[in-house]
Amino acid sequence: MANDWIDVCIQERFDAGELLSRLDDPSIQGAWEDEGGVHLYWPEDQWNEDRLASVRLVLADLAPSMGDISLSVRQVPAQDWNETWARSVKPLHIGRLVIRPSWESVVLGPRDIEIVLDPKQAFGTGHHATTRMMLEWLQKEIHGGEKALDVGTGSALLAMAAVKLGAASAIGVEHDSVAAECAREYLGLNHLDDRIDIITGTLDDLPGEKREIADLVLANLDRQTILDLTGDLVGSASEGARIMVSGILVEQQDEIVERFSSLGLACSERCEDEGWVAMKFFRPESCDGEA
Image (tube, rainbow, N blue to C red):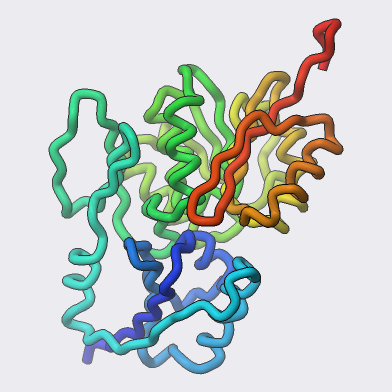
């Protein structure tokens, strides 16, 4: 007999891929973002109060300023599973980028760029403000031929967008093995296997031949992870490269700027959306032309 499902609906906008990575629970069978929040799914026979407590702890860590975040738990009959997914995940337009599940057709404009993402573990649609800001910036920052590095790539959405916008290649680094495998499937779905590499692990796990200095470093993570990785992000960037970070709450931005400044970088631009901040950093040149 088919197993029913537990639908945990978090009624705030979070990145589904980041939530899955933080929960690190192999029993989660699906996740997606919609306009009202994020849905996480467990088989009913694997759901318990300990898992609910884990969700609450992760939410408190990701957004401590929000207090108790509203969420609901409901049972979903097994026969409604596919219908529920198909009804809930809709195409998303962000500038020229059109992100859609494979079962939703869209009419593309002459300059539109399509990315196909079917909902599954590590699924991130771009609805969350942190991802949306990065996608909007990529459309201005990609001039053609760049080598991009996407740290904490999740569904590889940013890496795929960078390449489809004109970057020559991209490397996505993801420590969660389930997310990394999903990302590889998305590359195949979008015919990008030959231009994007997904590395399971951390920046330290990049093989020697992959340790190229990037022209564009992307990190849509969280405050603590960005602070921990700042030196590695800077060390992965070429002279004159842009480092774009997101996943930072408004009240956390000064700490991030201070950390990058201590390594000789300046914040050239910032963007705020729904209480979240994205920032661009670069290494300024001195008057004699040296960094």
